[in-house]
Image (cartoon, rainbow, N blue to C red; front, side, top):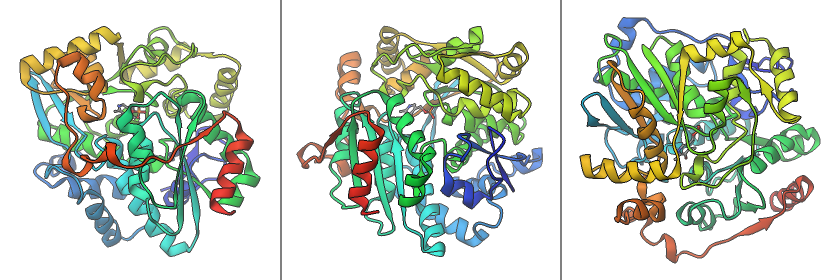
Length: 461
Ligand SMILES: *Cc1c(COP(=O)(O)O)cnc(C)c1O
């Protein structure tokens, strides 16, 4: 299995290389050269298997000879052992044809744990073989950072540097990032929004001198490994509702387009997914782009679902690459136009995208009202991101079962949830003392050289 860049000129890599590389050297994102497909009997055979077994069968065709089967099984088992629910990703019913996939039973209470816990294991295993030392730099809108820190804290051959937008994450999210005391954890509060942080990460990857000096690696969903690991729960959920015999649809609360792109990969692998519905909050660039064809950022507006406060949605590039017939030059052109303000998606590409994706946007008021209404109707307390998705899903219900992804635990966003529902969700026991632990905060300007200097000092490289 080989990996190619969406901009067409970076070296072709193996799975292990693509995972450790992060952003391609031509600025693009790595994607598999071909997507392996399952037959209907192979999909049917996933029914009733453990989450770990499904993970092995789904991930294995993509990893080439980076890991032996036995290694991969062992790493998967370790990754999910710390989850608080035996099913890992349980499905609950909200309405006759509407189901909620709870992805928040991992150690940091957001779906990011699914990928990060396994990526942590895969990185460690790869580094043990190579003897390398790396610096992981990540941008976060709140949940990737805590999940990455949880996965990499205390490792001797990894420094982990997380940048989050100052003042724009919830108190729980911030404290999850600033209270770990391990010396290999470095958290930066950047003056700006998530897009600022993500642009700094990309700039560091494009600064080859710095990149090579610190052994830069990335765990944002620009990393193919992240996306791949998220494909698994689309399979477990669909199969438990009768796939491949019965198709399903998914609605996904979307920011950087990584999670929903994993659903798109599942669909390419043969899982009968009718529609993948992109749910956005008031930062609705993806909804506008899929509706009008114009992808034009207009500034991030802070919302009660902060993990989706994004305007430059990195993984959309992967979908564009396919929609433009895998033409790297065309994607390069679009991304150059984006730097200058925005781009227009061609009619043909837009039709291709719309064959897979539908979309909707929800206001702040509708989000709060949905938290209240779903609690009253079902007893399920949603986080604001999941509420955005439930509200959009309700506009897209049809004959096919709809599965909405619940991406975070309500206790990560207690203020917004309490304001909407009157209930203040409690943190689980392992996090009960979060507000008593001392914080370490490093405030920094939106300045590439300041950030690079900080990282070099901290890592001594
Ligand atoms: C990251 C995140 C999202 C958005 O996922 P993308 O892969 O960036 O589209 C949605 N909800 C929560 C809670 C998140 O942490």
